[in-house]
Length: 343
Image (cartoon, rainbow, N blue to C red; front, side, top):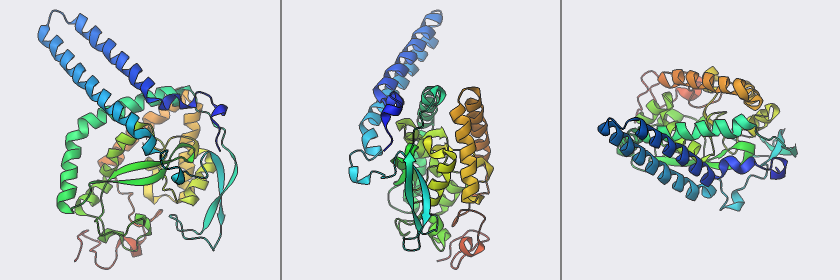
């Protein structure tokens, strides 16, 4: 197991009551300063105070919810769900007797040694502070959009608008990732999209648009606010993507929090083969671990590059990791040219 004593204050960035208290103090200080500087304009002063109270109240509500949901979000209430490889460095051992995993290979992970990585000041405090501010702002501003999306999903295909998946977080700790549902309720359960013989027939019209522009991932702002993810980082692997997990371990990319978007996503996304994708994740992890200006510059570069991906990206391959396979993306029952599903 990974030992907290290797990094005594490692849990500090996940102690929610501390984060909540510090940010509320900063917010109150700003609100008070703003008020004293604007005594001559009562209307603006009152407006600022009202907005500050509303935002502080919303932050307090979100923070309280995070406190309540944190343990459940990382399966602490379900010890049987704990990842046996958590906190360990692993390698992938091919074995034809094993079941086919989510990467399309047969084999299993083997632990080699403990992971002794300890996050630096930038990663633990500055990056976490930015994550909280950005995720909270996004949740507040996008809440009307989220409501519209959920209505649209339920109207097109009745069922839950949001679904939960088991993913691999920092140090291989399992956590519950949230996504807007993009597939029909009739789609096979517990089967990754890239393992389906004909994924297009299961994706809804709304889901196709959301996947193309990564809108289905935006609800993960909540996972970032919780502390299970970061705005920028390697995309979280499925719990059974053994090959990807092992490849990332070669680069130390599993030591850091997964992200909403990352270096690999702006350099090819689904078109990248697993070793190449893991290499990009490793480049980002190396820069982040160095911290300081280099870590900040890398985060800014990834953030700006992600805006291009969201605006219009063609590197989404439904049905595989790597170059698009015509036999999987254009299949019987689906018009591959128009994207219209044929009943």
